[in-house]
Length: 189
Ligand SMILES: CC(C)(COP(=O)(O)OP(=O)(O)OC[C@H]1O[C@@H](n2cnc3c(N)ncnc32)[C@H](O)[C@@H]1OP(=O)(O)O)[C@@H](O)C(=O)NCCC(=O)NCCS
Image 1 (cartoon, protein in one colour):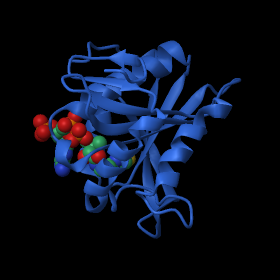
Image 2 (image 1 turned 135 degrees about the horizontal axis):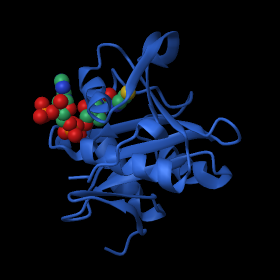
Image 3 (image 1 turned 30 degrees about the horizontal axis):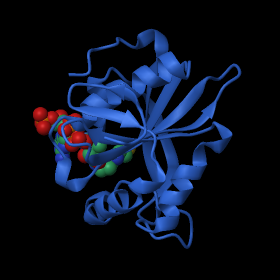
Image 4 (image 1 turned 90 degrees about the vertical axis):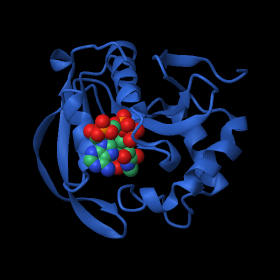
């Protein structure tokens, strides 16, 4: 497809790093998903619109310090960008942990893309990045996201009070975690 190499590929989607020429398509997907994502996604840093070119450029730059693995979820059939998966704030040493952030573009939800993408991301996190723990912080009423991590075998560790500022408010978040020793690699089908 002339894009960056896939880091992980499943049956229907693959994960790859973003490249400069993805900008227009990525921002168009964000724009089409604005209302859908607003209740669930942390705001971009002050002064940055959710669909601004700078947001995309930051995503490209984020990797330089090896602390973030920001990936595009692409449909294998035609290469279209259908979502985003971030393995963020990677801390090694005795912690070997990171935080997941993800969304599916509004036109592409409920087709199983994120279920597959999460399996691929876990494979990357545990096998390639050698992480021991991945964590997803989820607003309690986000049923879709909780169903997703539950299916992947995550455990709910507790409620973090006023943990993330989302949609303008400090919101409690459930902390869902998967440890490498609890991970059962599945075929990403
Ligand atoms: C959570 C999210 C990533 C799921 O992506 P997706 O590609 O639609 O997920 P999949 O199609 O792989 O999984 C579908 C399954 O998730 C669950 N699910 C998806 N949307 C749901 C909803 N609105 N309500 C309840 N369950 C839902 C169901 O179990 C569903 O299976 P079904 O369609 O057979 O019932 C997507 O809804 C999203 O981007 N939400 C907004 C951003 C967000 O919340 N990010 C996570 C922040 S913690």
